[in-house]
Image (tube, rainbow over all chains, first blue to last red; front, side, top):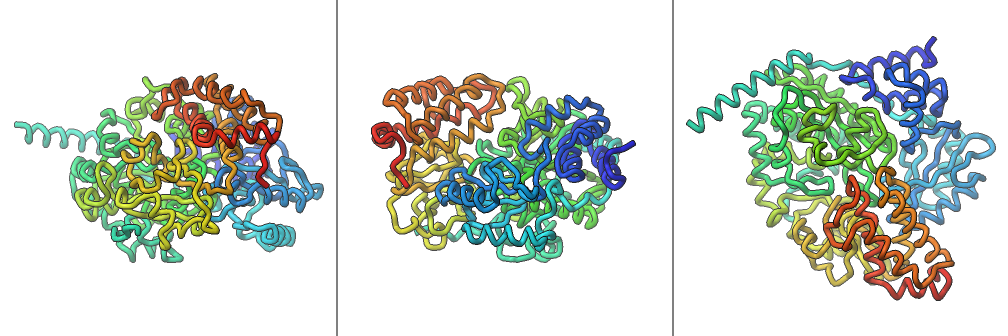
Length: 206
Length: 434
């Protein structure tokens, strides 16, 4: 019995087919697990282990290395405020402090209504809009406390659902179709091209 | 005044709202270079890139053509594109991924043809959700358009491109860590030798890892020739380059300007570029190439933006990120925050990096927040010296990868340039900036 919904299980199998080794699908499949449950659940881990021919312990150990995977439930919206160098110089610490007061939760925690989880992040590579804020890894470009509160109000009202999908959904563009270049054909073509090239080089050096 | 006569090579579509779509790309000369490349011998394509003497735009600045020539001949080989831009205050690849994904995809297919690799993986930083969507859409469109997949444009050449999401780890910007992540493991850098990607990379096969901006230059180079690219810039630093300007400037942003022909001062003060320092304050220090780079004082503002020019003065152009700190900036706080970043992002494999970063961070924390001791200043220098003996630049390495020796840069620079500020923090019992 699959833990993944039927559509996600199908996407998981499509992803697996893109790599010569199943383990390579580890990160994309963990993102899928997070998309389904909003975080990486034990059931999600077990499914990823089965799909990648690894063990749950191995999957958990790998997932823990990466900041984006949450192994405990988080809010529907994970709000990240950057305080790294460019944002520090633009008041990132002050904005993070404001965000904490405004959402009513300390950094690293989830608001009591379960809607928001607040995180202090490292550089999010959007330094011309410092201090930088992401919600579920979408840039919201709210550099002032007022603009921040405005975005929070809109999120609460569900008005930004199109721009900011619920936590876990990373890439909404599904790959259209699998691999198209048949492996054996590619190998044969490269071998032939390599031989032709060597013949050219030999002719030139003659 | 800045020299702004060079053509825009990678940001030529920046002004279009729909710059990321296939229709805009085709309407502005897209996929013409790929058609041209496919009529050339692969080695001729590589030779154009070699002639352009395009330096890698990721951070190390290794010539792309030479990197390509080192790829070991084998039945299977790979091209991996590094879109894991995470060096603090670097935000140029972010722009290219979101705003011109087709240019990247075309560059990637050209490179795949020149290198004759078996498959391509584009690794996109996980936090770039929109970038991931845009690049995946561009790949989908390219298949549909016939510029990707089987028998591209009716030629014998076939290739697949897979877009692979990262998941939040600075270290995966290091090429061997990125390969580990692509193999589904923790991003632990591999030791070189023996694990030079060109010899033993992805799945142990020969692999070229190139940066997003490097790849994005290829369509222009094929259309106009390597010589035209090499005619721009100066010395070893040819072409234009994206500079990400951040910090205390009026107009932060990504600017494509000719290398060497412009100086740090031009970039920061030209009204068409940085537009000067906020409130006309004086510059205290700049970080010239990402937070791994040693800092420069204002006396070096007239240095040309060239790889060798910056290296000669003991730092690096690195990732093309320039951070401006002005007289209102607390350099102790800035250096502490940068160290906190490295302590958080150290993968933990090597002792000097894992332990050293945390130790430096704790000492910097107490200086900034109160509780610092006068002897901490020399203790910090000693800790830095333990990670990168001699505190030279380029640094001596005691660790598997270059994250370790990057840790001391900011702390060492700050103490060297502004020791009085550290002393003041001790006597004040912490930071007196508001």
